[in-house]
Amino acid sequence: MCWSATADLVAGAAIAAVGVACVARVRRPRDLPLAALPLLLGAHQITEAVVWDGGGGSGPATLAWAVVAMPLLAVWVPLGVLLAAPPTARRRLLVPAVVGLGVGAVLSFSLSARTVRAEVRGHTVGYVLDLPHAPVVVAAYLLATLGALLLAADPLLRLLGGTVAAGAVVCALLWRLEFVSTWCAVAAVASVMLFGWVRRTGREFTPRDAGTH
Image 1 (cartoon, one colour):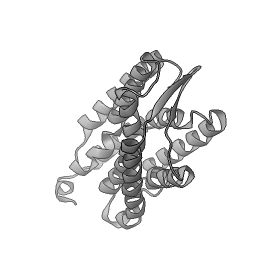
Image 2 (cartoon, rainbow, N blue to C red):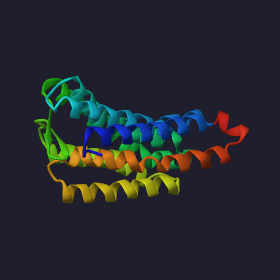
Image 3 (tube, rainbow, N blue to C red):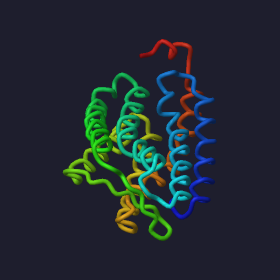
Image 4 (cartoon, rainbow, N blue to C red):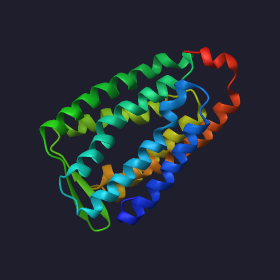
């Protein structure tokens, strides 16, 4: 949300509530990581409210925000899509999953070796990290996260990927310096679409699915 601490707090609470509803409706264990994504992103928005209240800086809240936004999502999203996919779609989803693991490792090292700093810039929060080869890392990050969704077998997940990709383009054009923060807010809001996916997979669940791997 990025406009104020209150906006982040309200949005985070709403998105987390959707995440709770998603997790409660899961019927197949392999769907749980993807269904829990709104819960993670809701907590992420609430963390940014703490960053707002602290006036930015490089404290624990800023680091926690960066860990979720960078390495954790790079790994979580493609692996979640891979686990939820039917066997026929898993081979093509291995590519974004492997890329996500690599990007996650690079970003984790960067966060451990360098200081990430949050800067309150009017109605947005900008995050600054001296990231080597940033264009390559960002491209790989988007390949892992958006690529996994766009390659998913489920049309609702592909729609989610398209929605987030469109939001990322808009944010990059309107708020270039605050792209990471603003795009993550769009991703969090778009993840509400996962509730529809969870409801549908729950309806399609059969006893045989419990043994599907």
